Length: 523
Image 1 (cartoon, rainbow, N blue to C red):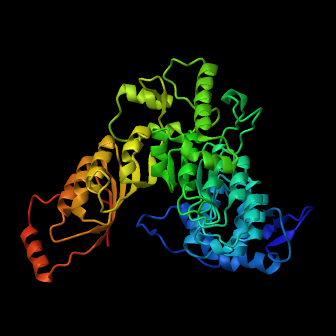
Image 2: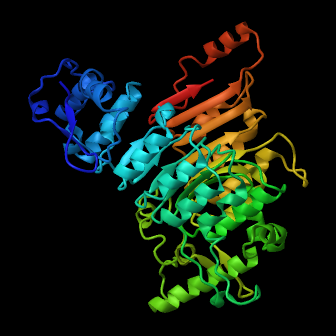
Image 3: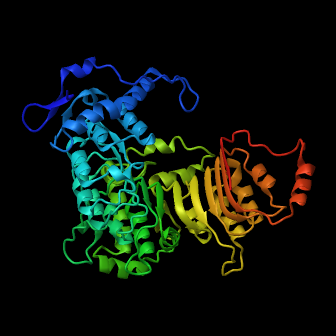
């Protein structure tokens, strides 16, 4: 006998009353969870549902309805569960690799607020996206990473029906310029966007996120900023866009990154190609380097964007009557939810004057010009030669990922010395550091001695080791580490010498320790 039947108009499905009296065909006897903790009653119920999903609920739906009807809603047992429990059940089935097409259809309920299909991208089809758009219009978080079979048109149509999205992950999908334009226009509450490894997406296609393609010009191109109208960009605080498609010209990634940094006032986490060069371009006001890019893309030139942002900052201040007060300058409706993060940051506080400058969003130089202070806290894809510019633009960084080579710069300085000098600006506040360095580990020791006192996470990739690599000195420089991950080349040394060195150090009471370490990976 089927558990669901068609009832009423509009193709809705309702559960028969007898489902309430059914007994589970399987019983969950586990009392201890995977992490060793005692299972709660809620967890036991979810495990029981997961155990019976294939043989009871999904089987009945697949046999009687799945390929026969298209339901806008399914009224059944899962429709009565709170959205958070449905989310947890979906995650549990994904982790067990037990989520089927029929089960997923049953779990797409209106109260669902979060849906992650990253671990089962094969289930993400055009038909499923139609179901999501129709049934889950209140979604706050959606992860479709790896769903390569979806046409970009289907993605655009789906996001056009999900205006409540706060977080969207599309890594490795067919996302393109049209999808980004739809997101910018329809998902006005979006705070996190991941489009990494989207090879159909060019750097210039990201411009609508910052309003760069939304200027409505009145008059000639030489009109003042006050003659222009700009829709506020979505309140993006996180944008991940590494390994996306190439631009038409070699300098497109740098120009696009500069536009994004200037036009997104709430951005705190960013990963983009060309970010290092973009920071130097902004610091030195070399805006004319992007003129060709702007003319080709049909957007205002970067110096106009710069003046427009300054104009909006002053206008907002004047409107609120707080031009001389120490209030943060934001674009209306863009940054109201991100303030709670700053109050939780660890590390020593800045001086009072610097704090005022960062909160106001600008610094007055001696010449009377204004220098932008970005709100970035976490950046990826940097190079060592960009740290000086980054330190002036982003004084509140607490997490960064760097790529360094083993060569000297034009002034003859090694990458190790550049890195140590650059990280000194954030000494005592940097909490997470990831370094890819193909040279000896000893080159990184000065930088870690500068920044290691506050680090809780350290990742070292590609470093070369030797019998005398200063690993103990690295541990000494980073006493608060909770996560340590190293991927290094092993030393080329005879096995006997290694044993002798170990014998000399065994039992040394002065060896450094990492009392807070929770995760260790050595490759």
